[in-house]
Picture 1 (cartoon, rainbow, N blue to C red):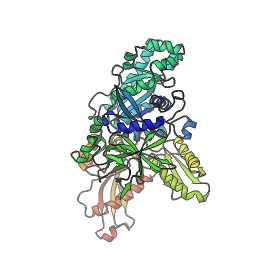
Picture 2: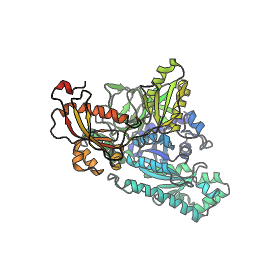
Picture 3: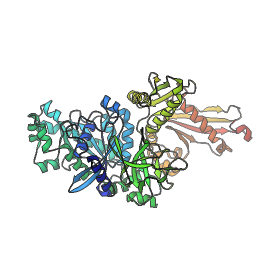
Picture 4: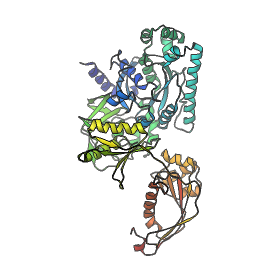
Amino acid sequence: MGRRKKIVQECERLMDNPEHIRNIAIAAHVDHGKTTLSDNLLAGAGMISQDTAGEQLAMDTKEDEQERGITIDAANVSMTHEYDDTNHLINLIDTPGHVDFGGDVTRAMRAVDGALVVVDAVEGAMPQTETVLWQALREGVKPALFINKVDRLISEFQEGPQEMQERLMSVIADVNELIRGMAENMDDIPEDWTVSVEDGTVGFGSALYKWGVSMPSMQRTGMDFGDIMELEQNDKRDELHERTPLSDVVLDMVCEHFPNPVDAQPRRVPRIWRGDPDSTLAEGMQLVDEDGEVVFMVTDISMDPHAGEIATGRVFSGTLEKGQELYVSGTAGKNRIQSVGLFMGSEREEVEHVPAGNIASVTGLRDAIAGSTVSSVEMTPFESIEHISEPVITKSVEAQNMDDLPKLIETLQQVAKEDPTIQIEINEDTGEHLISGQGELHLEVITQRIRDNQGIPVITGEPIVVFREQPQEASREVEGQSPNRHNKFYITVEPMAQEIVDAIQLGEVSMDMPELERREALQEAGMDKDTSQNVEDIHRTNILIDDTKGIQHLNETMELVLEGLQEALDDGPLAAEPVQGSLFRLHDAKLHEDTIHRGPA
């Protein structure tokens, strides 16, 4: 029996015991060494050779990732690790560090309970370090810290033990300051989530040279910083790796300090699901009940040339099995599961079933998109996964040969399904396909994949920056007339406070919420009580307030008013760019008494 087959069997055996499962993501600023660290962990688990770990970049499964030397797609792997004489199942997601692919990090955080944040010892905490911490804490995911590239401090900076410790302590202090600032307003985080060397939630090492230490490992091996510096300076890195291998240090830290699904789900479910907390469904999710109703949250969609569309995500309750017919939130009818599996890096291994508390990959969910809730009974879906950033760059894409046009449209629809941070629209005036993304690299990667993987030669236009429009001060009252001149509306517009805009962007305020909850959230963000009671509509980050009093027939025409307003906000008055952060007030309206003169015509 092959080594891989053995690992898969061991994973299957451990899947049914949620106490011994850890679902984790590795996240960091670009080039701080996440994928090299993942290689070490895979080698430690016996999945790749120790000799090639660090250079193989096994989690960069696509050709373009290997060529560019960066992670583009989040990659999943399941492995086992023995800690305290007990074998643990670790489901790991290696996430991208480049800011253009931040959407993958947000989606990965929904599936995991712990995030190992990697920071370069030389560069320290960088802007993307702050972003990934924010993405983790917002989803209720517990952080731990690994400071990488410590070998550079020793060899390049020639620092003594004292200076080195000071530098490392300042990195830890920066990370803790970020965690404290973000966790202040989070009531559901019971304990202090800052990291510390004494607790063992901080590790140090070099992913490239495969060695690592933490306080518990130093106590176990009897090594201190002096020994490490001596071995590193005398080029005895192999000995260093043998005496204190990185994979053991990090995987021990994961098993000891990250919560298992039984601890994490009672805290996480109320955070990401707004359904009835007293229902049997809620109870099943909080108890990680493998015999309960199936509840599966899709966090990633990928294409496999042989298996078709693969949906990866977290099983919150129940057990996924081949042949089940499940509902997908927001679509009619049911989808039938064709196969269930685990990811082993680039390969997918099919298994009989995947119970609650695990990360699974499923084929056959043709209606699912990243963010869908899949379940055996109709239920309130999970909160949508809120991406921090919006598309900022747009490019036009057209097929070189007209024959490829249907295939291109199909491919673009697939791209939008796989990556919700991409927006695709057809410009009706020019007939161009416009693709908007997080940055130039994001769009370059997408268009290159359309060319290489789908074999469609495409021509792309110059990238243009997406702008937004916003009023700068409050306007006077303006009279607007309907096209037939029989109906008049009196409206003002003013800029909205940034706190309210932020609350809408983070999904803390929306029209889907119960009215009372929305009112409280708006007042918390700084809106006055009277205004918050009259919210009629929220479109993008704009709000319409109905300040009218007792106007007959207004409720019949309101839908038409909203349609007109939304159209105007999508194509702003200055440069036909979307409008944001505006507060509109409808003060008064004069409507014709004849229905026919008030209708859509």
